[in-house]
Image (tube, rainbow, N blue to C red; front, top):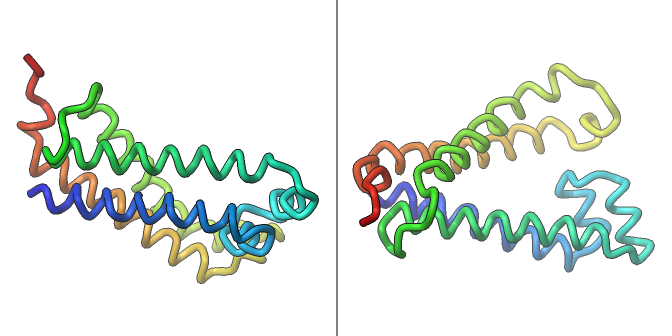
Length: 149
């Protein structure tokens, strides 16, 4: 079922668009996204560092989308396809899982300022991405495992 990979590709592409919006939106957007007060203050002072970090995330999420499309067979098979898809799924599932526990286990100002809603909603999104990649891996295992000749 390549629909799982397509869903994952769409979600990670939307994540890249969100990070572009954060860069454009400036300090308030950095704060709302959970990037932290430090990056927000740097953006406010005109530093290019927050935009640089955000741009790296944009590229990572775009790359993940491309790998999902490759796993779905929509574009050509990319190098290290199986390895990267497994790593992406694992990273997203781990982030999605631990995020539920952060507001319960930690009471730092950063965690408290973001609030429980941020941690729960972002964890649901990360889990949805990770599980869609995992479902894609399971249903397309023979395709992504086949050696390119």
